[in-house]
Image (cartoon, rainbow, N blue to C red):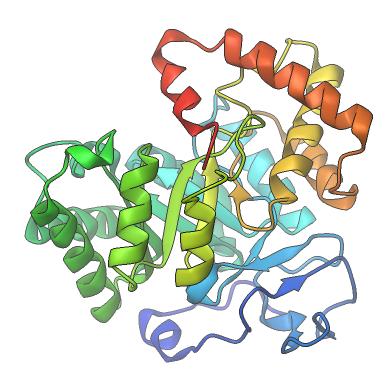
Amino acid sequence: MMHDKRITRRRFMREGATTAAGLIVGVAGGCGRSVGVAGRRRITTSKIRNYNGDMEYRRLGKTGLMVSAVAIGGHSRADQQEREKIIRRCLEVGINYIDSTGSGELHRDLKALGSQRDRVYLGLSETDREPRNPQYRTARKLLAVLDDALRNAKLEYADLWRITVYEPGGRHTFNTSCEVIEALEKAKKQGKARCGGIASHDRRWLKFMVEYFPQLDVVLFPFTTMSKAAPRDSLFDSLKKCDAGAFGIKPFAAGSLFTGQPQEDDRRARLALRYIMHSNTVIPIPGISRAEQVDNVAKAVLERRQLDVEERAELDALAGQSWASLPRHYQWLKDWEYV
């Protein structure tokens, strides 16, 4: 299968959703094989971008996109040369979503992808020129930012344009919320974004947005080893009811889960990713700084999801330690113990 065939804005606007709600494609089959689960429509794996039989893919809510069970984020300490190794290894193991916050990250990743850009879905956010900044709280201003970002990156469209909002999101007026949704809707109608979403650190506001605006496709929010579904009024319930896709940021609690010892940190990372993937709702977006870490992520996908009693106890202890050592500017992560 040719991976460098150009996907134009016109072509993707003709493509419809190909999967049923909740479909998970697991580690099975080769190129072109149809797989699925009992009672749900089957999907031909050749329709999944960058398909690898050893990777799991999940339907990203109402977008219909089949996304690898673990994606990668743009935040990374890697230089351009190392980032190219990281991206190359992601393509090899079947990862097919890259999240970029800001033009610098986007340009770096596009350079690393080269002619293989269409093997992955790209998420785009221009954080500094979005509603965090009071100057960018109208649909007109936000659309101008998207146009500028696409033009500078020489892209026809973004697979996911996800607007980052002020923390807590509840500080925005209802009018600002409407402007954000209007911008996302117009971008999709104009073929400048395949799907639209928002990222926020405010659980209650995200829940309101998902329920009030059914056209919202995807949300991004913190989800760490300490996070769990709230016993009442959970965001998870709203996501499932409204069929919204979800990505989890800061899966390693801003690095506070780690010790600085690579082998031990890899083990802890896999434990954390297994816990998050077991939610069957959130797709984690870890930051990757070395190509070797991609192999560790891929290994986590192959391991069983359900933690045994000893692993659960260990993860609870590790999570408590990381909670206690959170940097001052990441204390807000504690607001995400219940989702």
